[in-house]
Image (tube, rainbow, N blue to C red; front, top):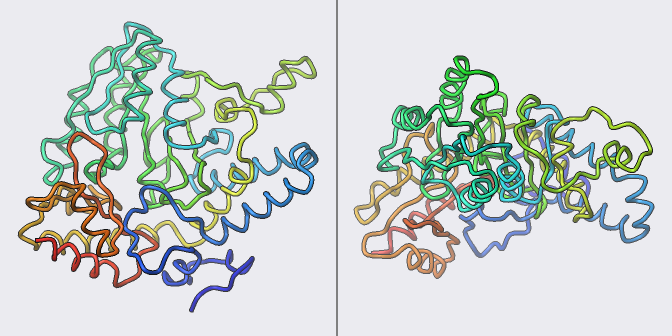
Length: 412
């Protein structure tokens, strides 16, 4: 039974069925949607929230901005804070993962004696932001392989590679939680423990900071940011979380924010008013300082809280179980096919919602095109090594995995 339209559709909870969750979205029913990692369709609670703010901005934009902006932004940050398990003042709002990473890395207070350790598996957004940092500060960037073969990667192999890559010059370790190029989920907590161990024997002024591109774990995994153990976490919220398009978050520990500086000045009232001489500068959190000022697509930013609340109401653990079960079903089916080579580990502790694979004799681009002809919407990895990619998630009906496997099986 579908949930009713309108405001009642926002009343999701732990007894809401997955078919009812799917009914909150306006996805084309004639396609099997297996590319949710790219860009989300807005669910009814998010659509309703966007429309509500848009209508108010249409009717009286000056009054709504002047009188409601900071209350609405506080509501968004409080919803994010509750979901992520961190302080609201530690969270900056951004437009995307790429913006969050750029704000973090381009502002790092490093020198030519410092090094950033990253990997060969990270996204262009990480690489390009670190290039800006290196050009501005003179710091060096070192890239390591975390694993030789993603399909057989182990947590021990990954953690050992990071530990061996750290040198006395290392000040930042920049990694990705779930690799969109292979589907490998890195053991961030174990890496954080290694970094913490090294920091205990270092001068506080040479502390190592662990920064994570977390976009493909957020909205899938139940781990809180505190449990993850990193110092910084950047993620777009318009993918697995189903947030408004053009939204994201950048989080940092309260004691970690001083290693970076804002690239775009904040319009947080206390800071703004202190600069023009109306009041003394307040002691505010690093997230508030890092949120870019200016005018944005406010109806989307202010509607973001509804996406965090929807996920929280459905239950983080329940969501994680569902997504992992669908992906395990897909991987188990693919590995029985002789013309398929899986690139993503079977082990759920080393994978999440992304499954990468090769079809013998077919380039990834051709695989995606062939599946599209069978009404399966797949994607390919935008990296030097290309794979076809399927991503079952909360919007995947119970029989869509088997229908997708049948489509892949026919690609001989």
